[in-house]
Length: 376
Image 1 (tube, rainbow, N blue to C red):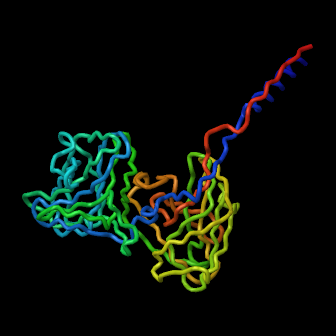
Image 2 (tube, helix red, strand yellow):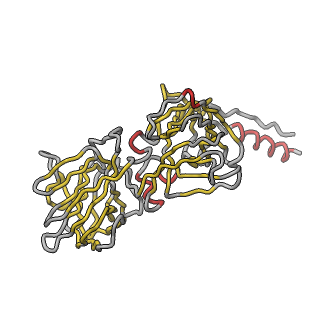
Image 3 (cartoon, one colour):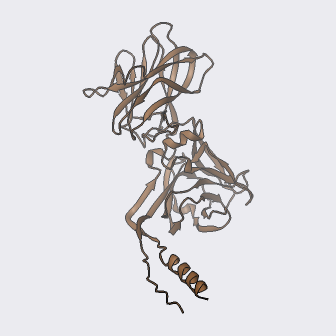
């Protein structure tokens, strides 16, 4: 009997030591992804290099102390191919342009671009890694050769309505001299030697797509599946969208089973304003909802009429590239039809941001109790 009693008290004592961290409010809301990453621009800007030694550079800051082993960039139209020099260079503290000096010995590599390589992603492995310290300013520079230069476009992303211009990171373009641009999101990424992709304020996307759908479409619920590596409390979303006249719809937050609706908000189109392009942001609030750590949830738009919703999403070249964006591979597109099975696409993300209001403070709210065993 005394052993059973000891076991019971031991179990009770163990449970008493479990504690739950408090979820603390912040003032206002915290938005993730940030504004310029919601749909990564709405059109492509193409930077032409068609003469000897012309260059395109993407100037950015190291977000981690790591070594760059690979650089990814994307072409636009390629009229004439060439062997490009892809470089990681230092940046002048005087004018903010690339210096022409490699970050370190052989932090560059050659990349052959063929005439047929229109709209193609290239991932270039550097001859030697470029070792960066957090906060270092560096440039990824793509150089047309002096001999047998190509005629091609290097692509970046831009907001066609100029609603999210960037001043840093930025693009520099060399023909006769350097010209800096703040109207584009750098369409480039760096991969570190440990196989991760850094979040550097860049937006490496292949395409931005506008989708019109209603309650009779092949997919009648479209949104993102997501999770957080810590407990949070969310209170709404921001969506880049444009409803047509009389397009009624619900915003639904689904639990981890993909079936149970934790929150449903019905939207009246008469209380919305659209500029007719679909490229406008809408903020929607719902009741505060606590979310568990490392647990998948879905937040979707669900039309409730035959009138179209216009929404935006972007595509990346590989799931790993999504790590250049806020939340990384923990947020990507999900859709279904007629309450059936969900289809997930790890290389696409709907133009949506979450509004967070509460975060785990990592402080235990409970405490241990003392138990004394008295034997017979």
